[in-house]
Figure 1 (cartoon, rainbow, N blue to C red):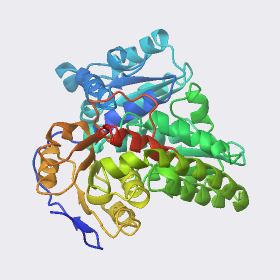
Figure 2: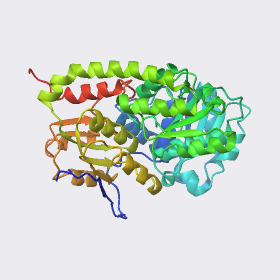
Figure 3: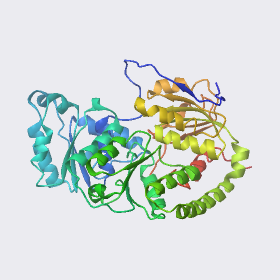
Figure 4: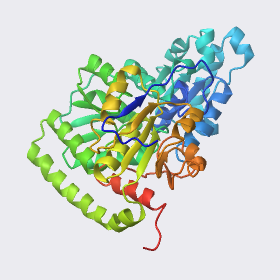
Length: 449
């Protein structure tokens, strides 16, 4: 069934009281671990069962383009390894000994005690135990029982705990911003995208504190209150962080529906950001014109392959909301691809869905509007992709081996999980990000012309 209506079709899913097959995220604890590992110099200390850390390594870290946990992650992660005894008698003493040994043996700038389901159910006073070590090290505690939410929630909880326990007011630095909404090990291209965005913003004289992936992780965290503006690159995730910073430090914030992909989105993002920071529009337009000229000139090099090999195909996207918006808008609005179906996998809250639908319908310039489906269950996603007409499937590696059965000639993993490609600093962000995306798509079809 091909959607060729001028209005987008939104398919609502009923709520099923059943187990979900292969969801596209981890639990809140997994998201907090991922965030801790994304901030270099942070040592995660898990107060949980041993399987929680191992599940993060095998599921979330490897699922993010076959990435390892890093020097403080993976099988070297300190963990209290709670068992039946601690369910009955509590695990506070074991946690106390674990924190002490971790500080002595693990070289870190910040220690993040991340507690899971068992201490949440037994009532361990994790905060009191952590407070005993405040004079010995920079240390915070984060409550992330799995039933609190998914890994996107864990990302927010990490920063909310940091705001509450670690950050203090600082003089505001004009032209400095913080970037939130990109979840490490959940957003496949987090390292490359943040690097590209920081470099692009430097051209405007904007100092972007990306917090993640840089070696001075603790310093970046402590500098959060010095920002003139907080920027959230997600239609919903990270908004609670921005609201908390506004409440505590008075920092206003700007939201953008996702990491900008290609010239149009990036130009729009820069104009919005410059307007909030009172940067002269003439300066912004000068940079935009230069960057767009380069990007569109290089797009001409793929013209023959694009027209002869894969001309204006229908495509489907299965991804988190921010990735789905960025990829779909670029392909539809700049490359002439025809959006057939978009499946949103990150389970955004109900109040955020209207904006997501708007971005994938009203802001799609093609007369072909996609069906928009909110679904996280992998089995149901496979069913929703059946009996549709598309040649290109931009999804996760879970869809790789069914792509041909669905009629797709091209499959590319652009969303979590991705076990079929190694991703280090690959990026689809910024003016040149669309070129990288087209390279990856068309490389699946190239042949002698």
